[in-house]
Amino acid sequence: MFTTGELASAGVSIALYPLSAFRAANAAALKVYQTLRSEGTQQAVIEIMQSRADLYDYLGYHDFETKLDQLFASSEEVSP
Image (cartoon, rainbow, N blue to C red):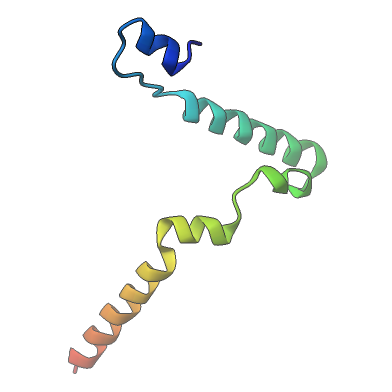
């Protein structure tokens, strides 16, 4: 629970937080699943969810889909 500045002043040159994002994601998932179970919809938790567009942008989904289309188009041209 120390700041990176406090750690640096104590001679620490690197600080790792390997489970912080994992624990945050688990807390968010729990909230979503509890809401789904109690309300039968995700409408009340949409604001804490990543949008599909943001997810696809982050993953490069459309670029991957385009590459697959190109690969399959190439293989169709070669097939008898």
